[in-house]
Amino acid sequence: MATERVSLVWDEFQTCSSNMQRALFEDTHFTDVTLACDDNKLVSAHRAVLSSSSDWFRQVLLQLPQHPHPLLYLRGVTSGQLEDLLHFIYRGEVEVAKDQLENFVNMARDLKIRGPF
Image (tube, rainbow, N blue to C red; front, side, top):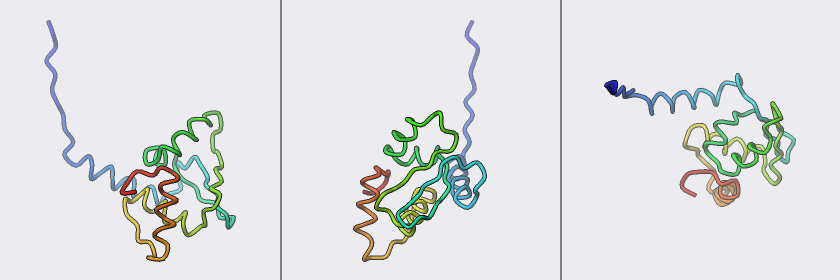
């Protein structure tokens, strides 16, 4: 005889998940990857967040499972661009200077960031 199953739904799941990801942006706990850019700035991030927002990050990070905390150098990316990119990845939105918009979109496309690119 089959056991009857009950469906449970967390009504606020998407809102809560979004808020948790936004909180991770400010929190360096549990970071497990470091991103480096052209002007020598290092920024810690979370593999799961990067991988969920970018096929490029996912492919690269899948090739590094034996490294507990890899360092990825993003050639051609400045610290300002990296900060904008991470703001978009973690928060789903970013304000970019109008004269930098084309560069930002091109970088997001190169890194295969999900979104309106």
